[in-house]
Each structure stands twice: as C-alpha cells, then as structure tokens.
Amino acid sequence: MSDEPEVCVWFNPGCSKCRGARDLLDGRGVEAQYFRYLDDSPSAGDIRRVMRQLGIDDPRLMMRTGEAVYRELALADEHGDALIAAMVEHPVLVERPIVIRDDRAVIARPPEKLLDLLD
Image (tube, rainbow, N blue to C red):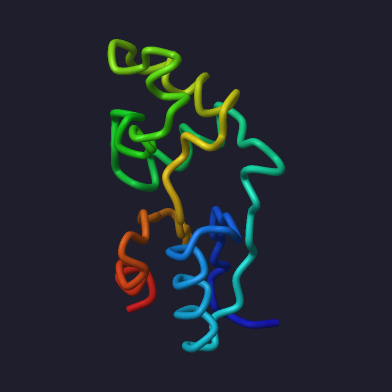
C-alpha cells in the first residue's frame, strides 16, 4: 500500500478542465478517486467539508454562476445554506474540477492549479 495521500477529484467527464486535471494526475503517476458528482449528488455535509478544505466561507465561490439554473432559481440574491441546498439539488452548479488531497482542496481551473496540492 502506498504512503501517498489519497487524491479525490469531483469530476465531470464531459468537462475539458476535468479531463485536463485527470491527464495531469496520470502524467505524474498519481492515482485518484473520481467522484462523478453529477451522477451522485454531493450532500450538504460534503459541500461544507469541501468548502473548509478550499478555505472558503461563501459557497458561491465554488458555484458555476453562469449556469441557466442559477438564474432560474434567482440565486444571486441567496446566501449560505440556500446556495448549498441549491448545489445539492442541482449539482451542475458545482464548479469543477475540485481536487482534494488530505485536508486541502483546489478548484483546478486551470488544471495546473492542482499542482499546488502535489508539491
């Protein structure tokens, strides 16, 4: 068994940035678990944990605010728990890819940002 910490990627295979992150990890020989969050929506607890790992207090900082559902739900006027609930109900709102290692996470946009977790 490897001493390397486990890496988890919140992953959408249709996203070029997610595929770029996977390619970077593969190129460095890093084994990762890929969480297809669109197929298995994260819980509110999952989102809060990732927010802590990202070092953010505002859930909007991990949201795709350009998505149509963001406008349809009028989320620009919402905060905190309402935004988290929206991401649970509509996981397309979660920014991607999110790469997690130990107690830290980054939104890997561009994918090279994940290198901060590996070095």
